[in-house]
Image (cartoon, rainbow over all chains, first blue to last red; front, side):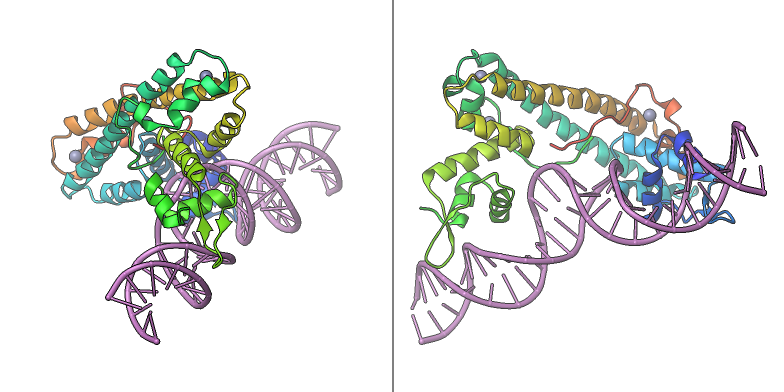
Length: 145
Length: 145
DNA sequence: CTTGAAGCTATAGTTGCTAGAGACATTAGG
DNA sequence: CCTAATGTCTCTAGCAACTATAGCTTCAAG
Ligand SMILES: [Zn+2]
Ligand SMILES: [Zn+2]
Ligand SMILES: [Zn+2]
Ligand SMILES: [Zn+2]
């Protein structure tokens, strides 16, 4: 059995994050020691590692919740899991497209500025006027990574 | 003079967002009509459009705050503005690199799954074991777009 | 003049954590 | 065995950048 600190170390997850996952029901309530400290089994470590890896791949906690509950039913079809992964891939691809457009706009701005006064700064100028942009960089959906 | 609704429409920004920007001091306190409703000038529209465009390009509100205060000093050197833009470009490039790695991992997962039961699902399997991944997709910094 | 849209304030919720306070538990050294 | 350091406990609040809700007031059209 691992303490929460050891578990976090083993899985590469910070201690408060583990408690947070438990709080939102992504991890089951941990066993407790006689002194009320959380104790984790090898299974718990696997589950946390799964979560961590899925987070690293950009899945939302909601998606991970679904993936975990699917992985608990080994006899079911994996179509649902595949669909979640495909949706995540599509999400990543759309962000990639957007970021690529942003990158070229930012590059243009930076390259075009001759570096004088603010009054002549191409960066400020472009920010004030989207018609100076070459691409259609709209602002649809957010989300990190 | 524009009402907040017209301003939002003209700039492509939702009304509550405008009020939020005022609240955090990104927009100055608006003039008020006799009935206490906000009224905006053409200048205010330009400022909001600047904010909107910078947001679209992924700048943080903090960065935008700095860019706005720079743009109010036309005689200063634009080095600071250029630096902010370069930092944003670097940020975008690093996210792009990360997302590209994610994309190929996700593609691999999705392609490799033969589509049977969960027990044999490659998606579930890979999520449980990063050593099945080909690339080093770590989880450094977040932030949207 | 009445009605419905638009505006007002204030508060709480979103996602995925992170940081702090103050109290208890465990462990290593002396 | 005692103590000090570290680890863990709960609870609360905070981060970005909004979005949504409730319960008002004001405005504009018919
Ligand atoms: Zn410049
Ligand atoms: Zn633009
Ligand atoms: Zn599958
Ligand atoms: Zn991996």
